[in-house]
Length: 173
Image (tube, rainbow, N blue to C red; front, top):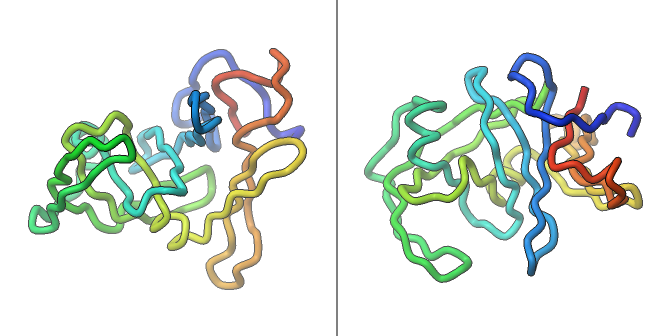
């Protein structure tokens, strides 16, 4: 893990490869948050292995993604907490970059989403992204699309909870 260094503040989009942010949830442990870029602009993503959809907030769609939304693909949804909402459309083939890794996602637009981007199982499966738990923490593994072999990895949560290794934000440098 020599390539990871804790930082105190967010860097601009040109000074990092990728950033992951971990958030403690009282019932589920740590959420995996990943700083990615879309059209060169930073966007905060949540990796959710329990989600059947990829979702982008309306504000993030309008201000960062700026690609056409197909309003004919509007669907009703029920969140894990039971709240009901309507996803107003679908933005197809959005490129999301994590350092040197390019991924694609089809994103449904959520009017009241409490996050910027939620990347669910369709993103993981379509981009061959795995989560690997190791003694020193949780890693995202990005596999080569041609061979299926691991090509890139990123430590997203160190297991040591000491103050020196438990920052809110980690940057790959």
